[in-house]
Structure formats: structure tokens, C-alpha cells
Length: 179
Image 1 (cartoon, helix red, strand yellow):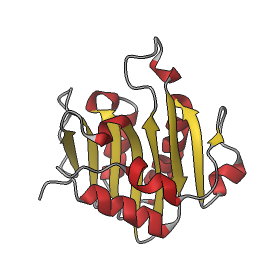
Image 2 (cartoon, helix red, strand yellow):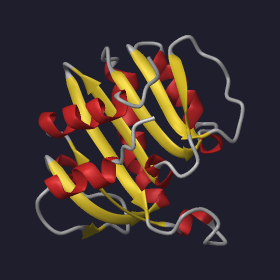
Image 3 (spheres, helix red, strand yellow):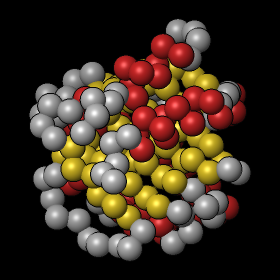
Image 4 (cartoon, one colour):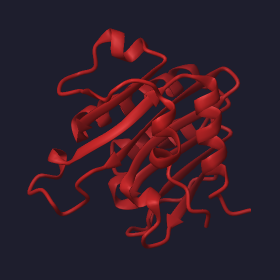
């Protein structure tokens, strides 16, 4: 599998300093073409929920790439939303450490990351369609098992709706999908 890291390969392409996001994203932050940020799990969950709901509502014929670090982190109600997105998507790829058997779906492919792969430290969601291009990626600064409450983990990343950046992210991840 290719040695891909969205954080390593894309973070430097977004201008500006990382903003500390501690609450819900402001309208200006949500609407910005690209944003560097530092945050925790609840804010990442909120960013992803917004993106997932857009896909479920608008039903683009998208390639969707999602990284949960560990497949076991893709649980209800998140998995339910991914099943809903898979109904209209071209294909959904879910990446993570293979630590749980996942339910089959004809339009979802689980990509098991090998031990030590850079994407195991990253949480990402990339929506790649002709009519919808958006992404978020975040690097886990702490790693699993370092906090009593996992939601306290710290992340640094980017979110973007810039087509060129989203195209790059999709191309990098496509290189990790088995032929």
C-alpha cells in the first residue's frame, strides 16, 4: 500500500496559521474555502456531520473516502449515515486499522491499513463529485490510549472546498485502493 498521508501531503498547501477551534465552527469558518485548525474530537464529529448531511440530502454521485483510524470507530449512528450515503454514491471507501468485522454493503469497501501506515493517525472525510468537492483531514497529535476520555484527543488539520485540493486528496487516497 502506498505511503500516503493527507496531513503531510496537503496541510502545507493551505495558507495561514492554524486556528484554535474550541466550540462549534462559526459561519465564516464553515464558509471559508480552506481553513487550518487545531481542535478536539467533538468539533471533528460536527464537521463530518455537516458534510455527511449534505451528501445525504443532495445525493451527489460521489466517491467518498473516510478514515476513522480504526474501523471500530465507525459505529452507529455514523455507520448508518455512511450506509445512507452509499445508496447514492458512486462508491464509499472506509479506511482504518482492521480491528472489527464490518457489515457488508455492495457500495462500501473497507480498506484495512497495515500497522504503522501514516493514515492510521489521521481522521478524514473526502467527498469527490463533479457537483460537490469538500474535505476535512486531521492528524491525531496524541494517539489512542493517551486520554482517559478519547474525546479529549488533540488534532491539527485542514478543511477545504477548493477543487484542486480536494482532487489531490482523492487522487492520493485512490492510490491506496486495491485494484
